[in-house]
Amino acid sequence: MYYWVAYDISSHRTRRLAAKGCKQAGLLRLQRSVFAGCASAELLRELEIQLRDLLAPQDRLSILPIDKTAWQRMRLLGDGPDKTALSRKKPVWYF
Image (cartoon, rainbow, N blue to C red; front, top):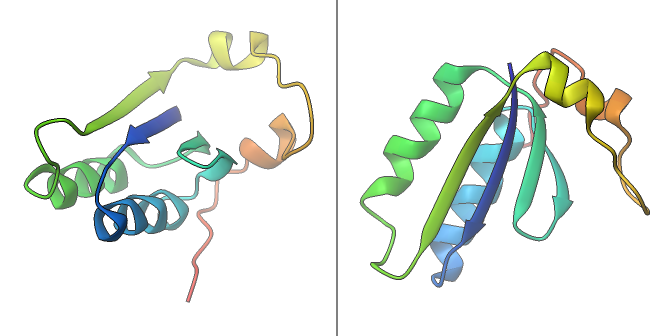
């Protein structure tokens, strides 16, 4: 399944955890707080559980599933990863 994950998080520590979790799920960064790609629903659920209690009342974490048709119709403009890179099935592990 394809996903977009976006967040607006005030705590530096929680923001770093969100970015690390997105990368570990196999998503690629499109902007500072926006990730997209093909990922396991289980890994994204784990990310949600990990961050849920750390989010401040004013913070926001959005995890948006994207179906294949919408993904194929999506347009990416500007510098950054292309849809081919975002569509890979294997997660990337960062150490």
